[in-house]
Image 1: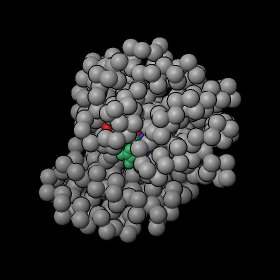
Image 2: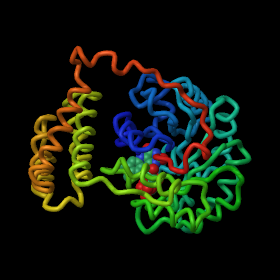
Image 3: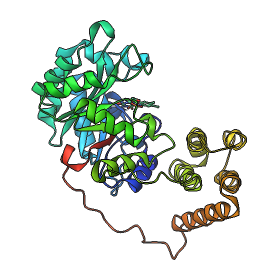
Image 4: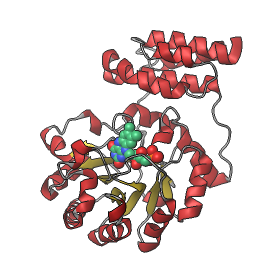
Length: 353
Ligand SMILES: Cc1cc2nc3c(=O)[nH]c(=O)nc-3n(C[C@H](O)[C@H](O)[C@H](O)COP(=O)(O)O)c2cc1C
């Protein structure tokens, strides 16, 4: 998700799920060639398997961008053919490629022959109700060399309205032999189970359900693996993750950008917590991590009593110590992780686009 799945968010998701597939925010192929050092390509050693998603419509530019993504350490490259935003589609990018299947096929063939890591494509059911073409489009992508696809069960015209059509996603699954991830409207572990039952998909991709809930993928994976999703985090635990998210953004992007971006994440984290609206209004105006910590501590006290407040403050202090430049802490991150080869479906049935 653009504006959401940066390296900080992905690290949180990974802390709850050691195997789900992660993907970066979408990156413009042209932009990448002009600015290959973009932060959008930052990957950490401990977050694999992670894919880099690129968008564009010029086969040669897409090849160059995919090679840059592969060089940056992507375990797979994902091509966006589903973005409905006019700014993207008017330049023939994103979902506009579903109206140009020949060009879409050329892009996939060209990129497939250039890179060695798996190539995946994300798309929608079609442009509008009159031009539903997901089945044929998926078959064309498979023939062109895609290794897996993700289908969002809505048309471009629908944007995010209506409900995702998992039966149609199921038709796509039946029509191709590459893995198919279904996508749309998964907000709880049980939604994922039902979606897979209806569609027969190899896995699910979860987007909005992850907002303010980076633990959701882990709960879905656990449900698939063991038959039970386990307990959702308590309100206080959610607030601790919210603080870590905010502090991580400030550390990574600097306080002025990090705190601004934090505000909308904090809104998501506090949704559903009883009596949180007053605190939410304060969080929408925060200007430092200390302020975030003070407001969240008050909310933790409100929802969890003295114990909740003290658990929250203890966790914040621990996090701040572990992430400080305190001499006792240096070298703690020097453990190198080995990047495993990725088998798109064997790794995990859950992907975070
Ligand atoms: C804020 C936001 C940003 C998104 N950015 C991307 C993106 O960069 N690439 C992409 O393939 N889809 C993107 N999407 C679409 C989602 O990946 C997903 O297809 C869609 O939200 C439906 O799934 P959901 O019901 O699980 O949210 C974005 C969605 C949202 C809400």
